[in-house]
Length: 374
Ligand SMILES: Cc1ncc(COP(=O)(O)O)c(C=O)c1O
Image 1 (cartoon, rainbow, N blue to C red):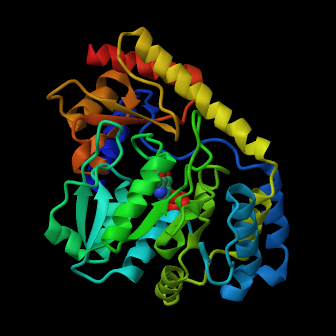
Image 2: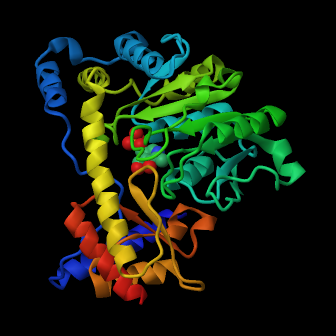
């Protein structure tokens, strides 16, 4: 499983640190900005409220789901029913893994872009599904045309994610219209994993649920980990097709009793924050992106500015091995990156930088990597 290259990196970082070396760690995509103080206050008061201490069944998630659907309608103009078209999640990663278990049978195929968030491959394996990589085009978006008819026959689900981790690709409405037409032609459920919805620097993040006919076959997963830096709190929600949501709810029932109510209250407060609070943090990531890109360009590395997400996806010179390069980067440049192959078969020969350090540190890392490439 792709996880092993991350373990390898972890060992390389520990070994470098054990030798007293300082490592600039850009290998993990966890937001390092603080959780807004209002949300922490909400959790503190919830922890003192005995009404939050017990198991939390569906009815106890309804205020959260009402807020999630209100937020979605305010942002995208589509009203959804919180009791049938929404479900609370313990993070979007948990939701996606259970959704694949819920909507496909062992032996079915799931279509995953050849470079994708590593958890998709593991979730497919857990559900006994055949994970079929979709080729990416020049624009880093999947090409739907080149698929084997036998695979299409077995395929039940397509998993997409824009703004993307790790490629930073952003999909426009025209792409989503193509994806929906493809899903309709082959009777697929679209699962859109959308944790980077706010992390857009140029253009806009599209929610495919609003496309005509999309509610028939789409589930979107939203997260509090990136927009509100709540990764450790584990909170998200699913919106979309009622039948798929009901299947997900049924699959989760034997596993969990939803996230702690106090954390759901944090989520409600987060969705009510004025939008400029989120935008302010997005500006922080934009300035980090600019610092890294400008430092590398200044050293003659031809990188372009990612339009979205919190990553830079770098193609290494032809024939260079991504794992070996990432290990050398730790040892000789003191910079930890994620080797591309950890994201799937299309990631060989790439590395991913996560923008999780201040601009001057990223610029230093960029210069050191440029020197190593040289
Ligand atoms: C594409 C993608 N999906 C899901 C997650 C995890 O989200 P959550 O913390 O809501 O489970 C991440 C985290 O990096 C991600 O990059």
